[in-house]
Amino acid sequence: MNCCRLRPRFEHVLELGVDAARELIVNGALKHAEQCDVKSFPGYVSLHVLEKDSQYWSPRLSLSLEPEPDGRTRVMGTYGPGTNVWSAFLYGYLLVGSAGVFSGLLGVCQWWLGMTAWGLWIFFAMLAIAVGMCVLAQVGQKIGEEQTLALHRVYQDAVGAQVEIG
Image (cartoon, rainbow, N blue to C red; front, side, top):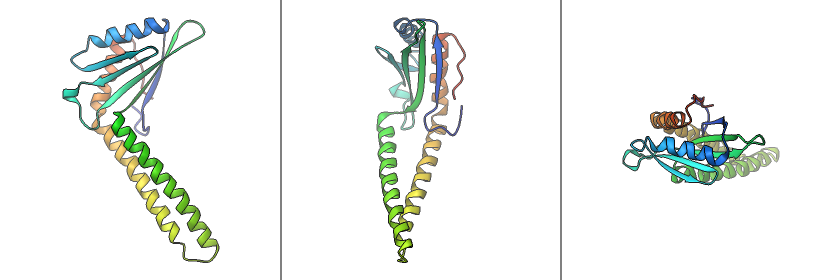
């Protein structure tokens, strides 16, 4: 598994139509009902760690099923945390990024005008917070790695093929 991606992902092509591919994945995943919960919608399947085994950093596997012109199905899988964790990181990055951009602009303008560039201190603080959030995300991925690999094995068993996470 690539350790530097915020949300590891993979692509896989199945020699089936979208509905048949979804049925194959769902039926295969249901054989592992002791490991994961399956949610299925048209063109989309989601595998979740069971609530009894779930922790703050537990991953989810979101599978988007896209039809190919030749009748096959492209499965795009993305591993990520639950929506509450993902939302917290998303809004954190938005807040830190916005404050960083504006404080950086302010600091550069202050510096060019020969003033005390206190805006740059805020910019570097926001940069440090952003790096800290990236490190925290990587730590969370490492904590949930075993469950991520378990969900990946469920998917591989369901489709009967080895798929590499990129």
